Image (cartoon, rainbow, N blue to C red):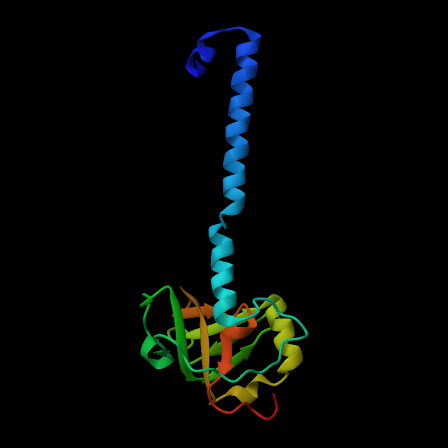
Length: 176
């Protein structure tokens, strides 16, 4: 009977077909609303693993590292690589240099910034870190860990976007 409605050119048949189609759209929308989006699922996973994903005045900086879960790569082992061993990495190493630009800081884990592993922060993350850690030079030579999605930019690179991504393995510097 439903299929015959599409063959009937009458106005009532078109109204019934439109109502049926609208009902299907409503049911699909209701099912979609109950299923979390991939972005929401990823956000929930990141919050469960790293804590707050936004920068707020309530966060405590700097943070000591918890025990690492999973594989932790040494920064010096990543120097010179242009292909990442995994899309998401935990990297530990000694900070060799901190470059403080106006809009971005670079944390380099080797002597050659063009090929070593590095991390960066900018925007709101940079403003917050500047407030809590006014002297990043005190981090030099310290063993730190950073987590995140890896990209390539003068070697392998992680963008520091939220608080739990960066922590001190060594004791926290006094000036922090």
